[in-house]
Length: 317
Image (cartoon, rainbow, N blue to C red; front, side):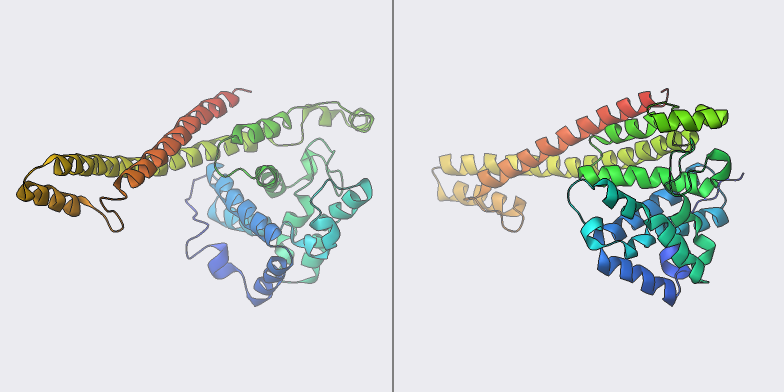
């Protein structure tokens, strides 16, 4: 299938022209009810779009799949806030209530002609290839491709958000979980029973391995972009550190100068090099702030490079 570029944020994207007033209203309801869920939906939609690109899906399917992903958790509109926003672990009964967001979202979409084409998002994003998912316990042959893609994007963002990562440091831990879930496993009596009934399911884990491997590529590219941006900032910091060092030299020479002419010369040199807010009096403090910022960003880049190495090794798992 021919690869077509699709930018989720350009004028042909979901946000710009594919949401009519009804859909905007319902998604705004989701936002006012739970900002975290709305942000999660946006993240999953964006990631789903990029997965489709990397999987070489055509533009029409990519657009469709992205909208399905945006709507995947819309059923949470009907989940009680006490369950949806509970900070701790859900009880079994609460988890049963939470799982209903899939069917509730499906029913909501079915009742609305504008949302009906995208029912796959709410209905299938928690189904697993080995039949251990919900709400229907479907297996690979019955789970549409868009559902398999959205599941991976949803699980990735849910884990990352839960751990509150502020950058890609530690993302490999999340990816390892998703990779492990591509592998067949028999860990419970229920899964043993299921696999006895259908030997085909014993070949699968929960996640589609092709989609998870594609996710690795997306994340590696993201980390590469973060390195580029951070390196650009480091380069600007180095320029400022070099400038501040020159100012410090002028200050030292100014203080050692005996003639007013020389003192004024070095003083003017400091003024020329200084940026707004920088003075002779706060020069040392500002210099140290720049050095600290450089050391922090340099450590981040070093960790990001290490993270890429770890993730690249995962491609062979």
